[in-house]
Image (cartoon, rainbow, N blue to C red):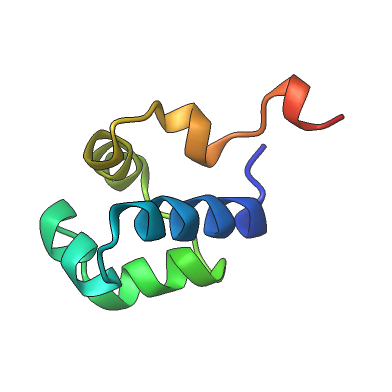
Length: 74
């Protein structure tokens, strides 16, 4: 299950932690700037290959950003 609002929150928080702009992150990850904006606003979700690139960039598991774990639902 993917919660777009939660994904948007996590992506925004990760980017802010790095001190980078959306443009810098999108360039580093190789994703179009408008796509990165829509992910951070929760209006769309990345395709699986983009999910992997984003997670790799931030050094986290894909599941940590894009999927709700049972313990997170409580």
